[in-house]
Amino acid sequence: MSIELRVAHCPGCGNVFQKNSRNLCASCASVADDQLNTIERFLLRNRFANTDETAAATMLPPEKIRSWIRQGKIKLFDYPNLSDECDLCRAAIRRGHICGACTIRINDDLTRTLERERVMKERLRVANSYISKN
Image 1: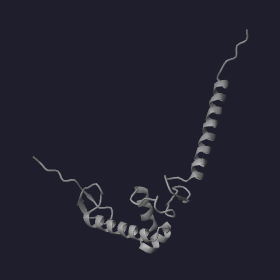
Image 2 (image 1 turned 90 degrees about the vertical axis):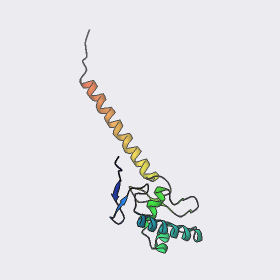
Image 3 (image 1 turned 180 degrees about the vertical axis):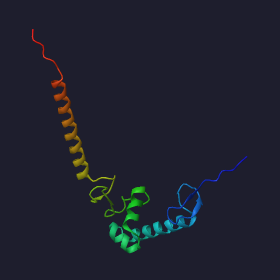
Image 4 (image 1 turned 60 degrees about the horizontal axis):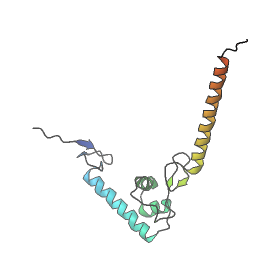
């Protein structure tokens, strides 16, 4: 009987650790928990702080805060000025990955592309059809 240990390299520090659900070694998991607690304590005292103010006050990069928002570790419903960024234009968003303006632009582009394809197929169908005279 063999025991299989699943190990990986920690993305935070590069040390080898036994795989777990957090995908972090014990020391990096502890640091992440401390950072998250620091953010939560700051936000409890400063409910209306935005993402950049929170990052400056806690000395953490805004990207880290945004990633925790995206992962659901920081809930936005209690903090009206906290936000994530749109993946395309970097506008402030409170939900999803893409802002409303980019969503509309993408949908319009798709609609135009589908219409062009439909017109091209219609032209090909007409060009390849035969007209018979009786």
